[in-house]
Amino acid sequence: MTTAQQPENKVQQARTVADLVEDIKALTTEIQELYCLDEIPWVLGVSWGKDSSTVLQLVWNAIAALPPEKRTKTVYVITTDTKVENPVVSAWVRKSLQNLKVAANKQGMPIDPHLLQPVIEDTFWVNLIGKGYPAPRNQFRWCTPRLKINPANQFIREIVRANGETILVLGTRKAESSKRAATMKKHQLDRVRDRLSPNASLPNSLIYTPIEDWSNNDVWIYLNQWDNPWGQSNKELFTMYRGATADNECPLVVDTSTPSCGDSRFGCWVCTLVSKDRSMEAMIQNDEEKEWMQPLLDIRNELDIKDDRDKRDFRRIWGEVQLFERNKDGEISVEPIPGPYTKYWREHWLRRLLEAQTKTRRTAPENMRDITLITLEEMSEIRRIWLEDKHEFDDSLPRIYQEVTGEEFQDPRPGADYSLLGRDEWIVLEEICEGDAMHLELMAKLLDTERQYRKKTRRVGIYDTLEKCFNTSSRSPEDAIKNARLKRELSEAVSQGDVAKVKQMTLGDVAAINEVDEGESDEQVTWASMKFKKENSE
Image 1 (cartoon, rainbow, N blue to C red):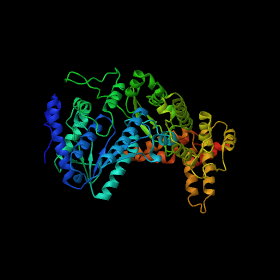
Image 2 (image 1 turned 60 degrees about the horizontal axis):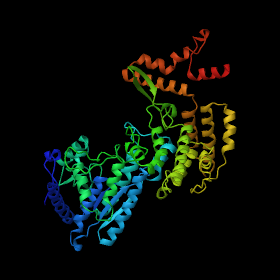
Image 3 (image 1 turned 90 degrees about the vertical axis):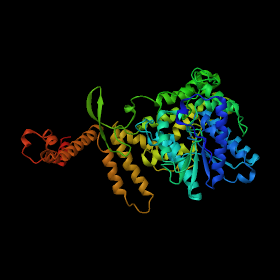
Image 4 (image 1 turned 30 degrees about the vertical axis):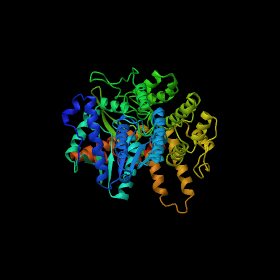
């Protein structure tokens, strides 16, 4: 089989246009031979950025040059919509997919485009606003698998189940980063066929990266000099990248001293894995017609703060206090790992998001007035989580929605508006608890747990659920953290084989002696006796 792979040192060398033309010819032949070699279907992953658009165009042109009788194998083109993509890019993607579908049908091309989305339970806002997941960080990068990897992998697995195996065609390049180059080089060593690398995460799928040795300059020269075969304007893509560059420049590249705009980054507008969303900032700065995106940028920047501990619960999402050793300015301390956003802040992010959506629908250009930052289905799932999982029966979502939008919230979930407990009962409970947040939480959990089991024919498991309410919500934050520290010290004593300390802490002597009077020091003291003593003294 003809191979278009370049020598490794070619990556760093400048290529002339003539060299690029020869490489494209060799790649065209390589793609055609790979395509006709077997019946294994191809899955071509595209983000509709410059690299994946280049690969799609190369594959299209190569297959289009084959006789119609040889175009028998389907090429599935998949794009993942995370539901939080940059709105300008999202509009471009949908337009591109539509053009691709129309052109493929018209020209008899075996191209089958699919727009994939995460399931509702995995979307960004359901996790952040519903469950309270904090804004993603490199130490807790919960968004990438849920929003991007899972939808694509699910589709690929379905193709593998139907056909036995598949070839995944990607636009990854070594020049993107040193880390990417090292990863691709490692995969090259494991190749079982020419140009095809194994996919470590998906069995029975191989990866083909046609432009792995191309530079940014090669990509832009190709897109600007070779016409788009499905009727899309590559000049529009070029303009979009230029608008997302700080200095609003994206020059045609004539030599290696001329920088391209290949570093412009498009992605989720809520992304807090980067220090700044420079592409959106540049779009707003360079184009008055894109100033309507400022509310989105404001939310993103509000989410991206260095320390958000004051916005988060002192317990993990399952209600347990977990401790970690913190080193701040050389001082070591043991502190609780912050958990999900509190009720107040989850409601705050919902309000901010709805305000931004309402404002952008008024100020955006006509073709963007239907923008949706959070869907009705997502809000329905958030409401369900707040009501059923977090027992927040004051049901604040419909109220916030109406206050911000002026419209009544229409929940598509059957029976969502039926409840024995509501806002009135919540207000009464707040008055009874007199500002004690943990007491309010415990009472709400107990009442709502009873309500949930009331509808069941058999109340199996109710005692375990009630016990969990007490385990997670019956202590004040100070007592819960103190208890977690005692458990940590006990665990360390056990691991160190300190029998005396284990006995002492098991009986609770250290803490108990501090709680009793001097005249009672000879009595046997237990945690239970301390608790009853405290209650009687009150």
